[in-house]
Length: 133
Image (tube, rainbow, N blue to C red; front, side, top):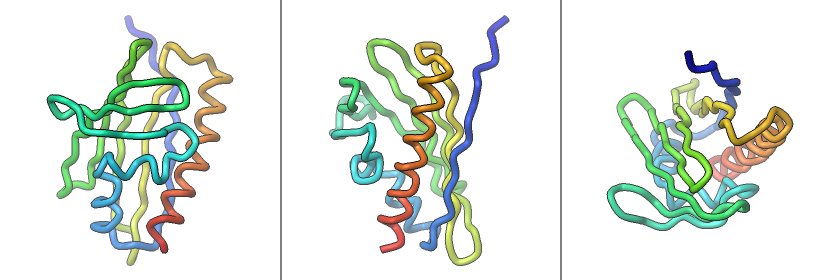
C-alpha cells in the first residue's frame, strides 16, 4: 500500500477577471515573472514539455490546461523526482481565486516541504501583484 503524501493547498484572491488570470497562468513562459523564488527560466521543449531552470537545477514542466474549467494542472520532473500539482482558477465576484494543491515529494523532508510552502506564499503574492496592476 502506498503511503498518502502530506499535502498543502495554496490559494490567493485576485482582483482581475478569471479569463485574464487563466490566460496568464496557463502560459508557462509567464511563470518566471511570479515564481520568483524558485524559477529562473522556462523555454519550450519537445512533446509539450517545457525546459525549466530552478534554483536547484534543471527540470521540465508540462501543463494540462482546460480553460472551460479553470484547470491548470501541471507535472514537474527532474533527475531526482517528479510530481503533479493541481491548479485551479475559479470566479470570485469580479475577480478570481487561484489555488494549487501540492503534495510533499518523497525527496523532501517535512522541514524542506514547510520551507517550500512558505516560498509558495511569496510567489502567490507576486502573482496577485502582477495581475492586479
